[in-house]
Image (cartoon, rainbow, N blue to C red; front, side, top):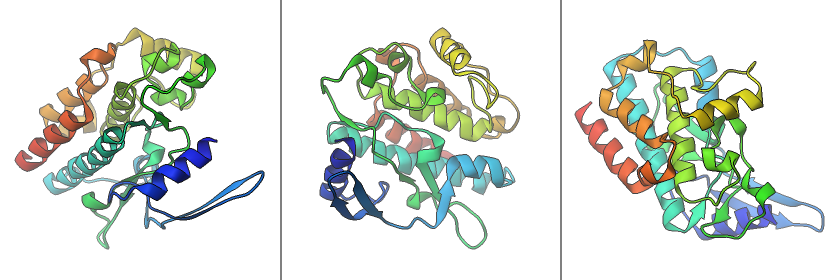
Length: 232
């Protein structure tokens, strides 16, 4: 059912920062997607494998990529959908021949976990997602709103600029990560993250607010990122 929902959504929409569905086939026991080829890598692969000189232009390109990704998420929310699994592995970066990020070609992928805003889902289904990037309300299995995606996006942005997850690494247990998320204590930025404008760092912390009511909307994030990009 979730795969059919993903196919129906992607088939109906077109946005430059959301992966294109070219064709899909429904079988009795399977659904087959033919998606566009994205000549790049996920942002988690970018963190792991690509060295980055923190030049003003490289920083600007990453902020630009954040803007376009937020723009894509804003479009998802405008269509009354909640992604529920925003994470670096689902955020794609594309590079030019000089290995620089082409900001405008950044894309959100994998809408398998997507639900309608206000959809009545089971308590078990409310906890669907990737633990490291879950919102507190996902962990608590509370009713979900657009703000759950904002928390996950903020955590993803934090991970990308800090090159480390705020709540634990690969050797940290899911239980510990959940406890740290629910505690709401975000480690201060340091090292490579300090090359980025303080306005971006403040925005990310706002996106990761423990209380979902204190998080900005996707449209606000997009607007703020545009302003940060233009002044960086």
